[in-house]
Image 1 (cartoon, protein in one colour):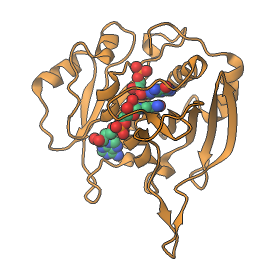
Image 2: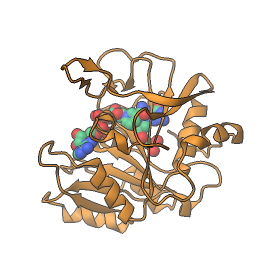
Image 3: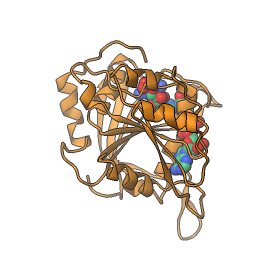
Image 4: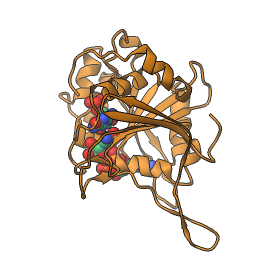
Length: 265
Ligand SMILES: NC(=O)c1ccc[n+]([C@@H]2O[C@H](COP(=O)([O-])OP(=O)(O)OC[C@H]3O[C@@H](n4cnc5c(N)ncnc54)[C@H](O)[C@@H]3O)[C@@H](O)[C@H]2O)c1
Ligand SMILES: Nc1nc(=O)c(N)c(NC[C@H](O)[C@H](O)[C@H](O)COP(=O)(O)O)[nH]1
């Protein structure tokens, strides 16, 4: 996403305010946010990064980062994007950077000293990641040293016995015990779809989606959570937003809301 400093106008920031974590929050506040095409795609293919946001909504994403303690992605995104995961809003200094969190249960991410997130941590323009992995996974001492040298660490959590995934509730509790009280979940597809499933979506406090005026076409990484069924086994919608606010930003529109039927914001 480039390296220049970004600004986000106060007028637009005020419109987002009802959808953001309060300045002080004790329980973890979870914001789900991503950029999507008109056909619900996050990128053209799993291993590639696709620019969807225009300049104004890109600045908004960095403004959102300035308002959260931590930002979370899955390992698929870490591998595809070599992300920076810092905040480049003008005036946000080294002490106000969000903590990157990468969910990597099987330690697929082979980060190096050259990885963007570690370079930014080294130069004081961001923080090194906390990597969520699973209990019993063998850590490489070299990777662990490299991560800790930059101020990051591994956090090992148990897998859920049924799904074999790490439960979102456990991730939030672990982050809370690290003093991280608001989390911005950025993607990718598997992370977003798993968070939108019925067992987890009650944990989402706010949803902020950038919709770009483009169709990426079939074969991309899409946001499309598993369907639910009613008592008769008939499919019903997976989730819906309530209290929506549509904010045009350049050629994009930003859709804010909360999940209908989930906890109050
Ligand atoms: N447009 C956007 O806003 C946006 C945002 C983020 C990523 N992306 C794109 O999305 C693509 C990557 O998406 P993806 O679906 O391939 O990967 P992903 O980033 O969702 O990572 C998937 C991996 O994360 C782990 N994971 C996710 N949820 C888990 C859970 N609950 N428990 C345990 N492990 C879990 C698993 O190992 C899984 O294989 C890339 O192309 C990236 O550029 C786009
Ligand atoms: N808002 C937004 N608009 C986009 O057009 C786009 N492609 C992403 N993508 C998000 C992204 O894939 C992950 O959140 C990154 O991996 C973060 O990377 P940076 O810190 O920006 O380097 N996000």
